[in-house]
Amino acid sequence: MIGVNTGRKVKMNIPVSWLKSVCFSETPLRELKSFYRATQDEKNWTFKANKYQKYGLAFHAEFVRGRGGQPVFYYDRRNIPITQSVESLGHPDLHEKTKAILPLCEPYGPKVLEPEKEIDFRWEREWRVVGDFQFAPKNVAFGICDESQIEKFEGLVDNAFPFLDPDWDIDKLKTYLEKRNLQALAEKL
Image 1 (cartoon, rainbow, N blue to C red):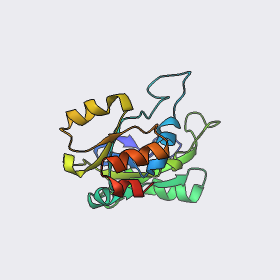
Image 2: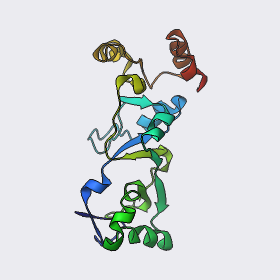
Image 3: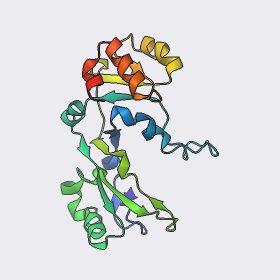
C-alpha cells in the first residue's frame, strides 16, 4: 500500500496495483529531439537525472485511446481546494469508485521533500493506459533509436515497422519518411 502523493505525509492507503499504468507522450514528430533532451544533464549521467533516452516505440493516438488511454490530469499542488479534492479520491470509502482515475492524477509545483525546487512535467503531454498495454508489431507506427542502430532494430522486429532517429532535423525526417513510403507520418510534420 502507498499513499496518495499530496505533498504531505501519507494520508490514504492505495493499493500499488491500482496505480499501475503505461505512460505515453503526445509529442509531435518535429519535437522528438526536444522531448528526450529536456531531461538530459551531461554533467550527471545517472538514470534518474537522465529520465529519457532516444529509444522507444510510437503508436498512433487513436490506437492508444482505443486501449483506454487518457490524458493525465495535472494539478498544482499549491491550489489547496484542488489538492484536497484529489486527496479525497484516496479515501477508503471511495476506493472502488475512484480507482480508475487515481493513476491519471499528477501534481506539479514544489517537490515534496525539497519544496524549494519545482517539478513540472506538463510539457510532456502525457497520456496513460491504466494496467497493461497489449499490442502487436503491426500496431506500432514507428520505433525510435540512434541512426547507427536503425538497421539492427528493424532486423530485431523483422522489419514490421520503421525506426527513425529523433536527432534528425525536420527536412531529413521528412525525406526519410517519404523515401520509406510513410507519407501519412511525413504529413504530420
